Each structure stands twice: as structure tokens, then as C-alpha cells.
Image (tube, rainbow, N blue to C red):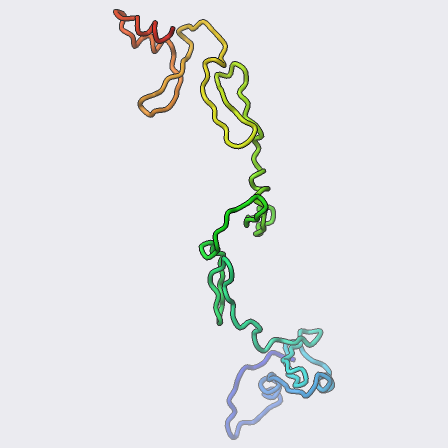
Length: 213
């Protein structure tokens, strides 16, 4: 079957040619009582041809190898937003979104699930809270001997503090460092002993001696 010629309004006196019949009239939808009647009447269907059968109450089109039933009307009449969903509608294109604000509140436990984006295939999946919590790499914090630190733990939250008792002993020289609190930004930094010594007036070395003793 050749491509259709489109639409034409015939008026009285027009000559109806074979090309007109094939190009205009034969491009319409043919109606049959049954699919059997359709197949008997159209022995050589052409790709793109339409036929309606009353027994199946369906519109068929020929895809080049077989007749395929097409839907005459949409099955979905409305989309209602359910739990933790917003949007919906009863006509046209409907959009829905995940909406946590419409969900009820609950105290989470390790056996509950949360939604995650799986980076392995870029799909949304559920994951146990216990699995998410257990993904940390740190299993314990241990303060080594002579590390100048105290504290640590193997579970929960850890607290570390500076400890002079967990520190080895050394004879200080001018090129050594000590920890100070920088009042310009309230952070802990290191300072050369020689820099500290230079701040003490030559006439009054007693405060430095007391501070370093």
C-alpha cells in the first residue's frame, strides 16, 4: 500500500480516479464483524493499514508481519498520591514525587529501612539502617604509648585529650616545639621554644623559668 494522499473534499462533478481511491478512500479504517472476516477480505495487508473488528471491539494495525491490537482508550483514570507521595491527577500527564513531609513520624530502629540511591546502577533501593550505620571504617581508637594523648574507645563516640603523663621525657632545646593556644583564632598550634624565650625581657627571666619547670 502506497502512502496516503491525505484529506480531500470531493465536490459534484469531480472525476474519481483509481489513484484517488487508493490514495484517499483506501487509507481509512475498514470495519469487519470478526477477525476472521477481516483476514478473509484483506489477504495481503500492507504495513500501516488499520481495521476495526466488532467481535473484539478493537482497532488493529498491520505492523508489516501481523495484526496488532491498539488501545482505544487509556486504562488509567486517575493517580492518587499515597503515603509519602505528592502529586497525582485525573487527566493529562501526571507527576508524582517522594514527599517526606507527608509521612508520619516514627523512632527509627536498626531493623528499619531507608531509601538510598544505588550508585552501581543509579536506581532507588531500600537499605537497612543497621547496614548504613555499620559501614564506618573505624572500629576502635587507641592512644599509643608516649603519644601525648589520652582516651579512645572501641564503640560509640570517642573523646581524646592531650596528656603530658603519656609522653616520653626529653631535654628541651631552642629548636624544639611546644603546644600553645593561638589567641588570634583560638586554635592549638606549635611554637618554637626559641620564639617563646625571645618574648621574655632579659631583666626578668623568672616567669619563663617557672612556666617551663
